[in-house]
Length: 71
Image 1 (cartoon, rainbow, N blue to C red):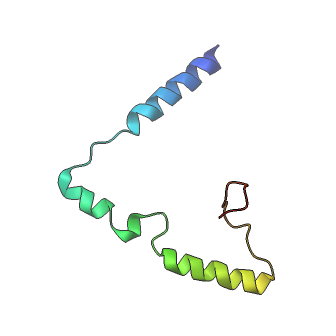
Image 2 (spheres, rainbow, N blue to C red; image 1 turned 90 degrees about the horizontal axis):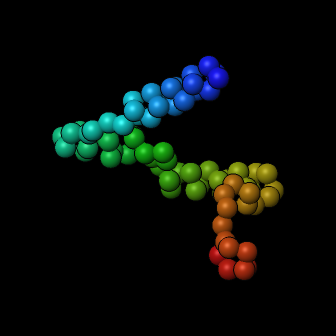
């Protein structure tokens, strides 16, 4: 019972602390390229292509298509 209460308390604490208000002046900094998950998408595409040539296999790096054969 104490473990469940501790887990619930930890979850609630994490949920409350993860919310933040961002000031208008800071939003420009948060949208810069360095803050994105993939700041250089064109470079990632190139590296995936080089890797597929090097390994001799293509695909498997992301999910595409819906199963109908059209991409």
